[in-house]
Image (cartoon, rainbow, N blue to C red; front, side):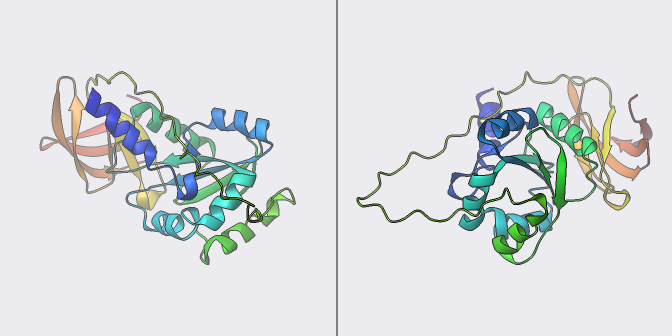
Length: 243
């Protein structure tokens, strides 16, 4: 149990970007904060450990101090991540899948800008050219955005600030899985992903999947509109969505 809590803390710690930027994992909490602070909301849909364009966007924009200064002034940030190898809680994954469906996201990276009430007003993907080019793409959302400018030098040395501490989502009770079940299908037709019990797979991938009190080896052969063809320990079978 202690190891599970440590994995979750490490997972969410990775969502702290340059200069202590805080990325939330819950849209409702983001709405409350955005209303209190009179800011926009930025949803960032990504595949952090497999999507090459997401990694470029992180390194060129989101991890840059210039973006951090801009974001603190204008946005409450929400990370909607779909990693393949990094562990993610089941409840968090279900919440991310719901946001992906609600905002009709089919490719990564996708950045969606919302009002404090949660209404979409702009979206974009990877933008080359660093923070300045990315910020310029946000101009259609209005004149409410402000470019944070560095404060004048203090008259005396400023005391060192305490680092931002991110409170991770409390770990859920470990799930007990029954028979193999197709939980969700996401992504465009050429890059579809399925959630089978506790495992995400794309066509051609193999994973060990929890089934009742043991694990089985599942190989993904074909993903259809409402079903998936797999082999379970070498035995072919089809799983229907929602059954």
